[in-house]
Length: 283
Image 1 (cartoon, rainbow, N blue to C red):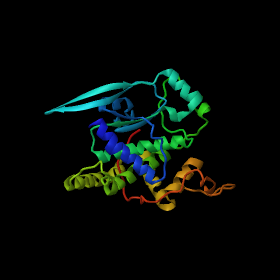
Image 2: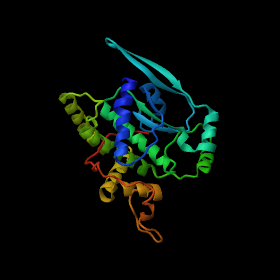
Image 3: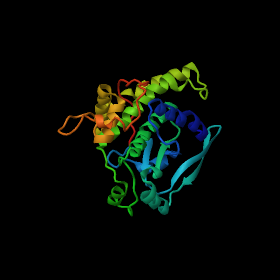
Image 4: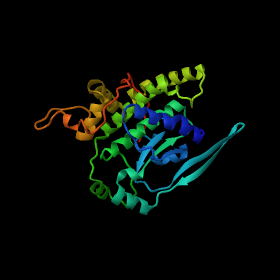
């Protein structure tokens, strides 16, 4: 619940995880800790689900972030501050810098570290996809037309099932990585009992996707995990970036996505594709 500890123990671990896969994500992306009241703004209108994390793009409404959290006996005092983006900054990003200048990752604070890390790993893949020139889930003010946005950025949007599926794979892989390696850094001081609890918690959420009402998360994860097992993470990401789909598909005039092999750096392959289902994040 401490913002400084979240930076040290969660944010840095997720960056290490991505670096272990040779996936470079700009460390300057704002990662904002928020409470449940702020997350209600991004509630899924169909399922009434309140997310624990969300990636927002070109969204200029102020975000109330957690500045400090102090515990007084049985009470917790939370201090907030507004993270603002004014309209001139939004227009400047659209016309001059592109989508990456307006990405913010929101993370609901107060959850166990492994779940907060899995949430962040999911949202960070949304950001990574946008850096590859894809238009991913984003929030726009009404005065900015989507047509204008697409025209300026010149990108294209993959299917929601593809996008959310690969993001869930990254969340799942981070959970496995965290329980095997995430505690080995000097910043962590954890007891055997806490480590076992974290591993049990990770297993508990391993089957959450099986009953998810949202097809993009349920079937998307299943298909994305199958693609990663069959073709590897690097080739799967190559095809998403190049073709907007999960797996290679031979068509006339196509080369099975081999022409995309330079779009990503070599994959170190030091995080094995995990088994099962993992934590669901609603964007």
